Length: 316
Image (cartoon, rainbow, N blue to C red; front, side, top):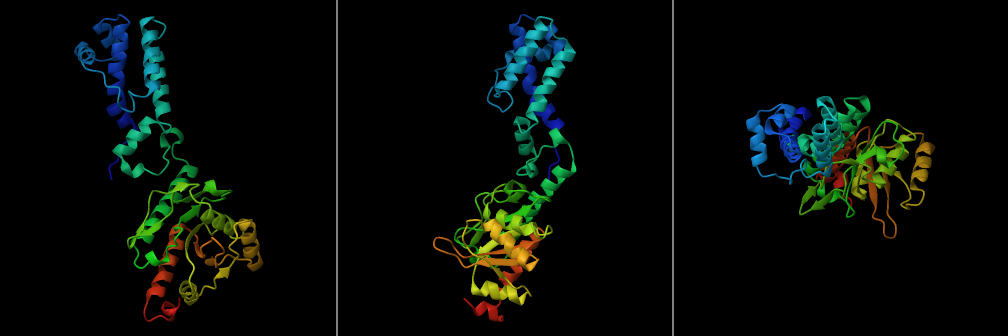
């Protein structure tokens, strides 16, 4: 893993773009190269190099219209002596702060440090706080669960035709935007489990509905994934000491009906299923305290199904 500070992006990617742009604007305003050098804190030779080089407006910093607008304001202010160095610095700092809020500096930072991708990182704006840390941990847990599902043996046949998703809710989740899942769902393709993208919040409706209904009764149940319903899977769950709970497949008021089912038992079972309906594929949900917990159980159930010495493996 490469560890790159945001300040390194500013020094290496922003300032080398901004200084030549500002030098050109100041030169167009009639300032001498030495005066420009004094304003920018560089040598006259550096200014000469800036002015003789061909401008490149193709990058994320130079190509952003906010950069040009800021440069023009600073150049006009310095040329008219309506700004001093402090004022110019404030303008530039405002631009950098804007770019650090999910802007082009974030884009460059993710290129330099790929491990930031998919984390919805906003450390530059918010710093390290408990809420952000929890969000990152939740996304990371779903990512680990998806990797576990994709690399486990025998999972391809457990993936429904409509695809699988894995989700995990934040503490105190109120709606699906508080549940992280995999956009586009996970599919079985050519004998492999394919995970299309990194998890995001609000990326799943059905798995989120199941988790939110479960949390209304048991707040420790924060993770879930869906598999295809089969007699073999349900039998394998029973061999794990789990009595699967059946519910109606209809989508209408599903969250309310699930809560009522859980409340009637005064608990949330680890396996919940429906047998499908017209246009609805039979689906089984495996639940756990986290996405990884749920996926580990699902993999264990699938292994029991595929064990030729196990009676559940012979059921269809």
